Image (tube, rainbow, N blue to C red; front, side, top):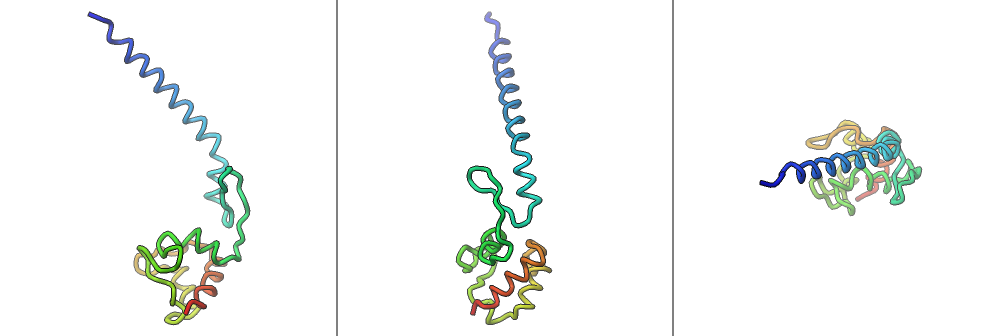
Length: 126
């Protein structure tokens, strides 16, 4: 009978080696991940550099925080259509919804300053 422990030992060693490599890659990216999570108005670009975003650009704020539910073109996916939201809600009402949430929309997905910029922009959608 052959020694069947050797292939399992090799697999275990290779597995440990891969786990160590993945660990070190994760530790190397920790700073970038933390900057992306903590830094409001920052975005991680393709090459891994962190670039300051414009907190006063409503389209950039929308793309980063709202488009996932309301669609890239404001037509709505899992969230409602916003193409004519300005005709049914005032700027103040839109800002309140952004800050406080409504229905399935969670509150405070953006900072209060960004909410004001978004509300002003969305109130023009008629």
